[in-house]
Amino acid sequence: MQLVRPAHEHLPSVAAALRRGWSPNTTRPEAAQEELALIGADADDYLRWMDDPEAQGPPVTLADGRQVPRIPGLRRWLWADDADAPASDLQRFIGVISLRWMPGNAPLPPHVLGHVGYAIVPWHAGRGHASAALKALLPLARAQGLTSIELTTDPANLASQRVITRNGGLLVERFDKGPTYGHAPGLRYRIAL
Image (cartoon, rainbow, N blue to C red):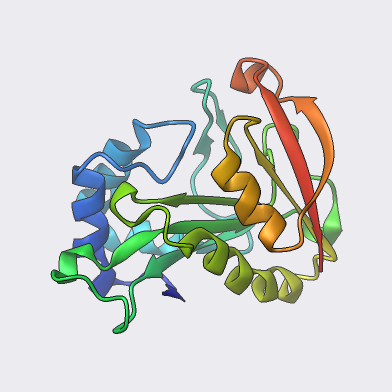
């Protein structure tokens, strides 16, 4: 598995995953259809906002439907390399991992639950890809000047907790995710860089 910068050659596989119902946003399943619409309307524009370190892109839609200004971030796609290659090129897309930050290491806004988010397509789940992707993303976080990153997960999501702890994450608190996320409980981890 490798992290790739989103590009046109990857779009058919990503679009196939979206059409199968996978969503890159674990709090908003409807994001799958929204992303398909963006790809169909202007693939160049869609790809442009995958790397947005200056937060120039369009607003972001939250789980409660509100739109908020984008913060600096980047997205990488997890791609099956030749050793992991499935039978079809359309199945080489494994998932997505995103990094977001605030300039000058300022705290994240309350609606941003962590510096990193990831989502693996169900047909590639359980193979260690999320752990490998997080490990590969850590140098990119350091390159943005971050000295640590925070990740959050649901208390029942044991697989995500393992991904984080395998990469040096330490549990720092149990917390209420706030009104944007229906006051659901969460776990906050920190990885020192």
